[in-house]
Image: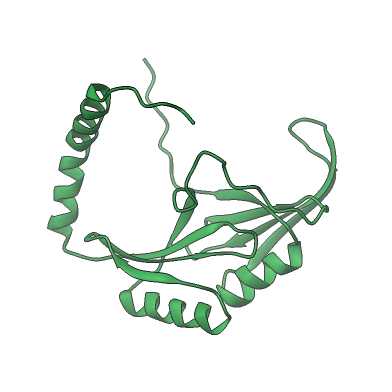
Length: 175
């Protein structure tokens, strides 16, 4: 058996956007993530499919990116019909509760509706949507290293308990 290679971190998360400039303004000018790369192609390299697009990359301080595809048709990605709007999102980390409050004020000053801060007891978070309807979270860790280590030790047991509870439930109707 071979060893599993280490996953070093997130390179990028990609999502469809309605408009490259609208998305650039939101992520670069409002959130402060620099636009670091744009790919402009007419054919998809992995499939050969004809689909003119631009692929935008916005970099975070750790070198990871959030990326978007503008397919040139002024259409955003549609939400998943079987998933509540609060489920699918990406959480971006800031350094402190003060930074969280600063980002909340900055977003609200730009007319963005913000929920929170919400205290999850290991992080505090704010939630909002980008111009494409994509849900984002800014979050910052709270608590002690010992508390976080306790969460780590309990995580596998929590999943095992959830799985057992779920298996014991009567089947629900699918709507």
